[in-house]
Length: 66
Image (cartoon, rainbow, N blue to C red; front, side, top):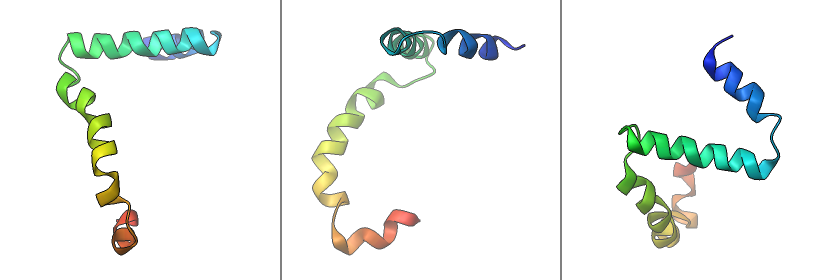
C-alpha cells in the first residue's frame, strides 16, 4: 500500500473538523516546499468575487462549456 493510500485510509476515520485540519496542513506543506504559489492562492478568492459580474452574464454563457 502506498503512503498516499495509507494517508487516505487514516483520514477517512477522522471527523470532518479534523480532516479539515489535515487538509490545511497539506496546504501549508505545499506552500513551504514551493509546490503552491501563495500569492495566487490568496488572490484567487478576491479575483473570483471581483470578476463575478464579468464572468456571470448571459452573453458569455456559450463559453461555460468550452
